[in-house]
Amino acid sequence: MQWIAQGFIFRRITSPFHQLDPRVKLLVSIELFTLSLLVGSLPEVIIALSGIFAIASISKILRRISRTLTYTLFFAIIIFSINILVGYPLMDAFVIAVRFLAIVGSTSIFFLTTPPDELELVMKWFRLPRDIVFAFVTAVRFVPVLMMDALQIMDAQKSRGLELQKGNIFSRFRRFIPILIPLIVDAVLRSGDLAEAMEARAYGAVKKPTSLYQLEIGVWGKVATILSITLIVPLAYLFLFLM
Amino acid sequence: MIEFSSVEYRHPNGVLALRNIDLKIRKGEVLAIVGENGAGKTTLIKHTNGLLKPSKGKVTAFDMDTNDESVANLSRKIGIIFQNPDHQIFSESVENEVKFALKNFGFKEEAISERLEWALNFFDLERYRTTSPMLLSGGEKKRLCIASVLAWDPDVVVMDEPTVGQDFIQKERLIKIIQMLVSKGKTVVIVSHDIEFIWPLQPRVIVMCGGKIIADNKAGKIFQERELLNKARIVKPQLQELSEKIHGESSGAFSNIYDAKQWVISKLKSD
Ligand SMILES: Nc1ncnc2c1ncn2[C@@H]1O[C@H](COP(=O)(O)OP(=O)(O)OP(=O)(O)O)[C@@H](O)[C@H]1O
Ligand SMILES: [Mg+2]
Image 1 (tube, rainbow over the protein chains, first blue to last red):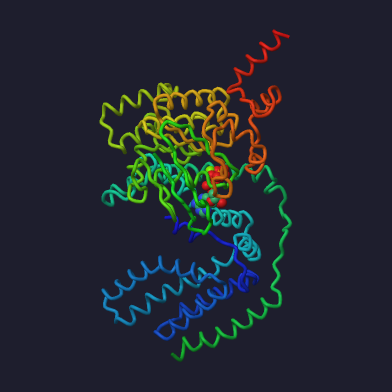
Image 2 (cartoon, rainbow over the protein chains, first blue to last red):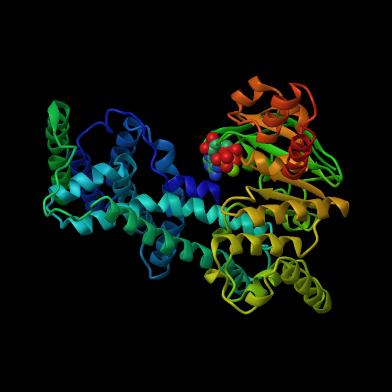
C-alpha cells in the first residue's frame, strides 16, 4: 500500500528534461502519445516504447515509470485476452496491448516531470478560467495528501483489530467502510478549511491577479522543440504510410 | 515485555527514521517518549504492535516476534491511540464507535455491553451514546478515541500526543486515568511534547533525536540536563525550574503543582 502511495507523489528531481519549459514537456509528451496511437506493428511498437524510455531515462524517472507500467500491465493483459477471445491473431493482440502501455507511458512522462505549479502555468497559458485551473491543480496536489491520510487511517483501524486481508471479496469490501468514511469526511473538512484559508488570503479579490512566475522557453527549450519535431514528423509519416 | 533490539527502519521513500534502537519496555512502567518533530517517535510506537516491521533488527512483544504476528493479534494486548481522532471515527453513533474494536476482537455479546457501559461511564460520554461522533467537539472526539481503545482492556496502552486540544481539566483527568491504569498493573507509553503534562507522572523518559535514542532515564534526572534538553529542543518543566530556584540544582523537584503551592503557603506563613 505504501508502495502504491509513493507512486503518486511528485518528487522534485533535477534533470535536463525537468528543467525544460513545461510547454515543451507537454509537446514531447503529446508527440510520443501520437506516435503510440499510430503504432500498428511490432517494430513500430518497439520504436515508440524506446522513445518513451529514452526520455524517461534522461529525466531519471525510469524506475517510477516502470512502476506505473507495472500497474498498467494488468489492464494490458485484460486487453490482450479480450482480443484473443474475439479472434485477433496473436501478434495483433500483442501489439494492441503493448500500444496501450505506450499510450499510458507517454502521458505519464508529462505528469511525472511536471510539478503542480508548472501545470498551473501551462493551464493558464491555454487561457483556461482561473477557478478551473485552481480546482484542477489543487486536486492534483491533494492526491498524495489523501494517500497519506488513507495510510494513517488504515493504521488506526488496524490497531483496533480491523483485518483487511481476511474473508471473501464481499466481506472485504465491507471492511473498507471504516477506512473510506474517515477519508471522505477528512477530505470534505479539509476542503472547507482550504476554502476559508484561501479567502482569508484574498483569493478572488481582484479579477486579474499577477503571477510571480512567467513561462520562458529558453534556448534548450527551442532546441528540444525543433529536435523533437524533426524526429517525430518523419516517423509519423513512416508509421502511417510506409510500414 | 516489548523489546527492540538494534532496530533500524527505513521508510519506502528512503528516509531513515529509526537508527539502532535498543529499548526494553517493562511491565507496569510509564514511559514517556519526547523529542523534536520528525525525531521518529510515531515511527517507533508503530513498531510495538507490528504496524511497521523493522528493516533491520527485531521487535518482540509478549515473546512474539512482530514479524510473525498479525497486527490484530498484537493489538489485542497493545492498544495504540493515535493523534488524530478524525482518522478513526466512522460510526453513526458513539456507542458503535466503542463497540467496533470489541467486535473485531471477538468479544461475547455480554462482555461487549459490559465494556461499553464502563467506557461510556468512565469517559463521561454517556449522554452522547446515540449521537454521531462526528458532531462531538475536538476534545470529546479525542476522549472517545481513548475510550474506544481502553474498552478492550489492553495490557499496554500507547498514546500519541494525547493532550493536543485538551483543556486543563481534561489533562488532569488524563493524568488520573494513566495513574489508574498503572495501579492496575498496565504499562503506559506516552508520546508527547507536553512536558508539563508528563511531569506529574514522573515517568521513565526517553529522548529521541534524528531517529536515535539519545537519553533514557528517570524524569527527575533527564530534566536536569540543560544541554540534553537544548539538543532535543525541550523547555524545562516549570516545577523543576521553580524548585531549582528555591532549593538549588540537583535537588528533587515538586512532583505536582499542589505540592508546590503547599510549600509556598507554608513558607509564607512561617516567614
Ligand atoms: N509514511 C511515511 N513515509 C515516508 N516518510 C515518513 C513517513 N512517516 C514519517 N516519515 C518520516 O520519518 C521521520 C520520522 O517521522 P515520525 O512521524 O516518526 O516523527 P515524530 O517524532 O512522530 O514527529 P512529530 O513530533 O512531528 O509527530 C520524519 O523525517 C518523517 O518525514
Ligand atoms: Mg508523531
